[in-house]
Length: 219
Ligand code: UDP
Ligand code: MG
Image 1 (cartoon, rainbow, N blue to C red):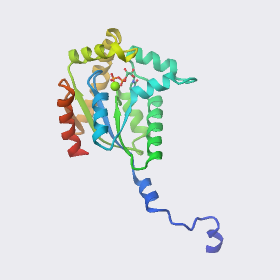
Image 2 (spheres, helix red, strand yellow):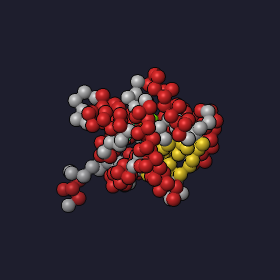
Image 3 (cartoon, rainbow, N blue to C red):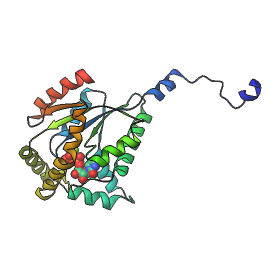
Image 4 (cartoon, helix red, strand yellow):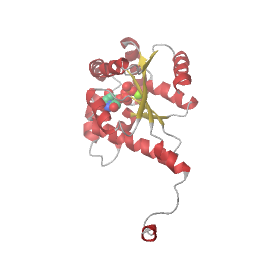
């Protein structure tokens, strides 16, 4: 019997490294806040100091929109300009692909900052049903910034960003979506005791000092 099976079952014990990599569930920090709250800027700083990979849902969607032959290009472009939210299966597909590619290149890179997601109930439900088993959400980093500062920053960024949504018209819509759809998601995580808030209306360095205190503690 054993002799027969030995032909089809590998006799080689899997390496410790391989077994560990299977156990390494990706660990995720959701980074949320209004448009212009500084999510992208602060994520870049975090990556310089801590072993995290920054994945911006918005950037991934813009890349997908620009990809030749993308079946979602038009849909994404419309949502972005209107400040509405892309169906979650598209966003999750892009996020998971980016996570897998990162971990395939280096199995030690399993810490992710997911910037600008989940933005509404559809996003959260989609995440819970497809990603809950695959990844662990450590906490939500919330950049709390008032409307005036957010608008001013986005309009300033709009002078050079080339983004189709950094104009007053799109911004009004994005802020509406943020208040109506994203804030309740942050509140939900708050109830679970999973939110770390930072006053994001201060300068980049001051905000980062506070962010650092959180990552030094929570890693
Ligand atoms: N977006 C989306 N789902 C996401 C992230 C972004 O539909 O999970 C779309 C949405 O239309 C949003 C736009 O992409 O208004 C820009 O998002 P981004 O995160 O780049 O904007 P930011 O919050 O950084 O200003
Ligand atoms: Mg951003």
